Image (cartoon, rainbow, N blue to C red; front, top):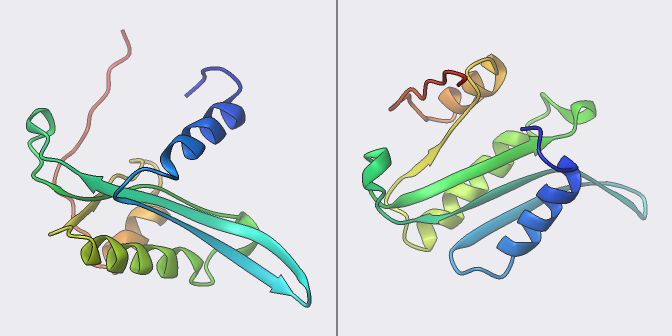
Length: 126
């Protein structure tokens, strides 16, 4: 995406999601003594049936981010597993997510966590 200043736009979007029903927002924090640093987050939520996507009602993980300095230490796995637990607890019969085609590391992680491909989104520039 290359619209507006990306960080400010995404911050506004996240803030708009916090108080919505059916939202799961998790934050991973690294503690060193009394110092805390946010090292990752996950945003997910309940989604209704979507006929245009041929997708039944579900929990959907919209975004997972882990700081490069702590990747490959289980942070993303813990975020995803906790999100699945919480989404299931609030009524999700299944959990779906999307991963960028070129992000093989993320796709491999999600497959190890039990996700499987169901659709392929394709894009052509106008």
